Length: 86
Image 1 (tube, rainbow, N blue to C red):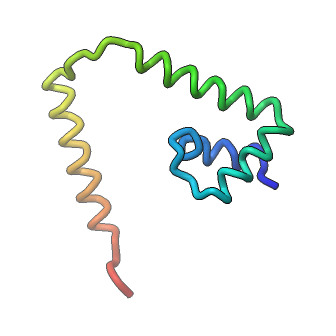
Image 2: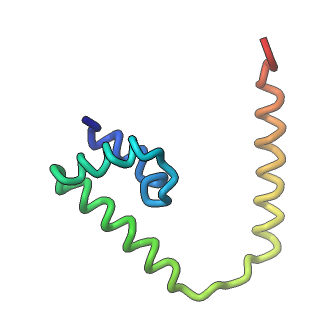
């Protein structure tokens, strides 16, 4: 049986339908017994639905530049700290 923490950790993949059937079945069994987690799933779905109804707006170029720079820095940090194959 999954815990509420397990369900919370797997929530995005559950909502996105990216879980193996076995994991999905375990979550659904938990949801049958846990009102708190059912409410969490319902809230998450409502947020996704509401966000999808928002009008699309262009991303400011300065934000894109900052995101690209941060991604490059992160990628560089990951490669520097990766010892490679053992």
